[in-house]
Amino acid sequence: MKCFFPGTIQTFLFFFVHTLLTLLWPDSRVEADASGPGGGGPAGGRGPGPGGGIGLGGDKCPHVCFCNVNSKIVYCSRRGLPAIPTSIPRDTLQLNLNGNVFQSTGLERSNFSRWSSLEHLYMSECGIESIAVDTFRDLSSLEWLDISNNRIKIVQDYTFRGLQLQHLFLNGNRHIGLQPKAMEGLTTSGLYLHDCSLSRLHPEVLTPLNHTLRYLWLHGNELDRLERRLSPLFSSLSHLRLGSNPLHCNCELLWLKEFYDRHGDKFKGATSPSCLTPQRLRGKFFNEMAMTDFRCQAPVFNNIDALFDSFQGRLKCTATGDPAPTLYWIQPNGRTTKYIAPPDEDARKNEGLLTLTKPAGSDQELAGMYICVANNEAGNVTLTINVSWPHSRIVTYKTVAGDPGISSTQRTLFPDLNELLSKSSTRKDDISVTLTPDTKVGQGPQTPSSDTRLHEQHNNHTATRHVVETGGAARGASFSLSELIGAIIGTHLCTLLLCLIVIPIYYRKKWKPSTMMGTNCRQSSMHKLPPIPPESVYLNGLGHHPANYMDIPTTKR
Image (cartoon, rainbow, N blue to C red; front, side, top):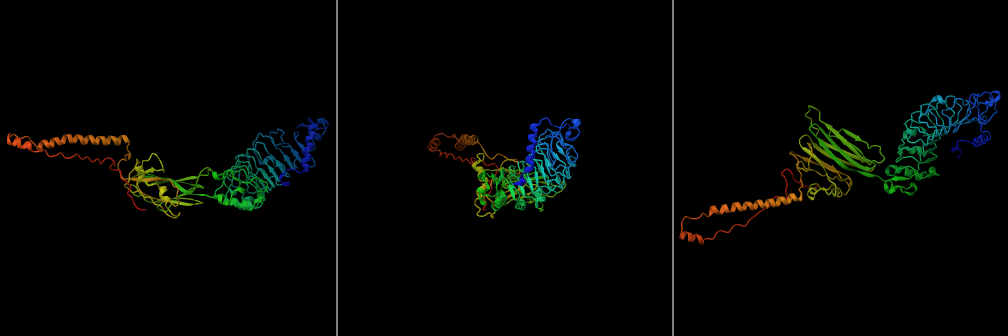
């Protein structure tokens, strides 16, 4: 516990005496231009007070500070100093400047070059925003450096080069950024980065501290994941704090759970790490969970889109998983394009957009088999599109199970992919859905023909289907109830009108009145007219199918 406190008993007594003397002699401050011992003597007219005294190295003590000759401690905390005093004795060992908001928010090497003997430097709550490279290079004896609770935006590479510290306090600098080599050239036993709003901690930042770091405090940040590459560093620590971070507890963090179970003594006295996501593990601490709780979700495709014109084509596949999958587009010529998921802690989705451009003046066709692969720690899924381009038109049609906007007739054209995938017995089975080139549904822009096949290794899938249109303007495939009723009534009326016109004409021509009277007339009156054939009306148009709309032929899978 001794190493966690900046002072010793002597320092405590020094501060106590300083406070007591300040209460007894509140006006005993030495003016900045005073001369003589203690700032007094004949010129100053004052005796030595708590703010005076002989300079520790021949320099006089700042009049608002307290200087202890024996311990070589200069205490200037919360004195309203606008800048770092330049008259601090050269042989000072401990300098406390906490709580002074400096007018200049940047630290430079010239601020500290005079105090090569300095061992402890405290500058907490000083409004510091930036630190120049090698600012502390001349402080070869420095052991404690406290620049916590400032507004430091970024720690540049080699900022602490040459320092051999016991403890470095950077805590309380909200949204601080650490460049990859920020700790290069530094050795320290303790590094305190708690309450800094850190959302990522790259292992490269801490690599230079592998052999010296013993205490690492990272609690109270915004870390949702920690890379396995941190495991060797964590193993060498004596104490580690990771509590109060919004960890996402999937299979990527299983290594940390294993580390916690094996090295529980390293977390002693600190809050146990806990999970924020997924929802089923929200608020649970590591000591309450089993390793089987840390699992991932295999990727699935959500949308598959294709759009082509005369000289350019675009293929896009979108997949989700936990963690967000990495996508790959593999072209017929073997070229592979990789798409890494964005570094967003809330993102579980990734999309890969492949743009194909036909060279001007070239007859080269960008036809062939295009493969999209989605991969994460839980597995992979593959989608294959066989493209013949240019020639035809292609449109995308998105179906979602239970969508009220899709009629039952339309659903029969597009068998639900979830239903097909649920029939696979193993993850290695490939389920293929082939849409024939002469199928036409919906409307779409000028696009090429495409024979689309989906090879899926997992189930629970909702995808955008691709349908090929061979020519002509696409028409609507659904009719309202009023349109159907009107068609039926119109058909009946037309048929009836036709019968009323055609049948009398027919019988009038067949049975002309005779010019002969008498027997012929009597004989003709005895003949019976042949019976009128019953009216036969066949309404074939009820199941209206325009000429350019055809069902997908059924094929056995």
